[in-house]
Amino acid sequence: MTPAQEVDYILNDCFFAVGQAVGTQKSLDFDVIPWWRARYRAFFLHAMSAKGNSWLRDRHRVTAVGRFLGQRALHHAGDSPSIDLRTAALASNDVETGCRMNAEREGVSVPTSGRA
Amino acid sequence: MSTHTGSSFQTDVTESLATSTDTFNTLSAVEIQELERQVEYIVDDCFFTVGQVVGMRTTVDYDAVMWWRDHYREKFLAAMMAFGNRWMQDRSNVTSVAIMLAERAVRYSEGKPSIDADAARRAAADVERHCELHARRAARRQGRDTSDAAVPRIAGYWCTYP
Image (cartoon, rainbow over all chains, first blue to last red; front, top):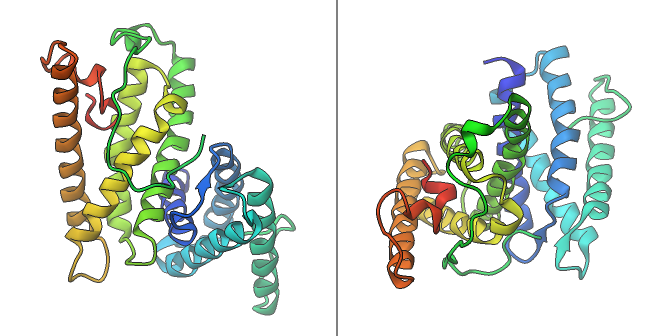
């Protein structure tokens, strides 16, 4: 399977993980889905194509980050019944900041746009 | 529109489908490409909902993710090619079915460390049986034709089509 084919399975896996952390107390606005998909598809393809990352090796760690994304989205949503685009962007910023800090600690170079 | 926040398994009857099953024959390559793009968002939406309902009770094997994706992407795309993209109208009904899928998968994975491909397949079979029965009951209630050709036009066509 090429990275371009596999990335769709990986994104499904990650949406499941985000949903796990969000739980059933809040819903997700549909327009968040294309935004998150476009963003993380690009990051994941970069990781797989340029750096040769393996999903099966990294899955446990990346889905944990997906659950963290869900937790941050819940936090930013506050009393709102749903997670909207603004909330999703704030959550992504939190997660990507954390990922960049981790990568720098581990001595891994990352693009400035961050990666999960 | 938003994903699930309730707990009902009930699917409503989908009525007044605007397009016919001949749509596929009239779609251009560009239109098919657009539906292939849109179906990815719909599959993502369903994975999110299944994850919401499974919660932290268990996790899912990658094999199960792959099986669900292959299975439902094909069905959703076939439904969209036949009836057009009705996701925004049908989203709450279909995500209600995803709740059932999640609950059945959790049940079939009892005693296992995670939802494996076998549990995913068995859950999908249960859900599709439910959708078919619901569609036939709904069709009978409305006095409509309950032949195989008519049923997907009434309810559950997302997960039972073709």
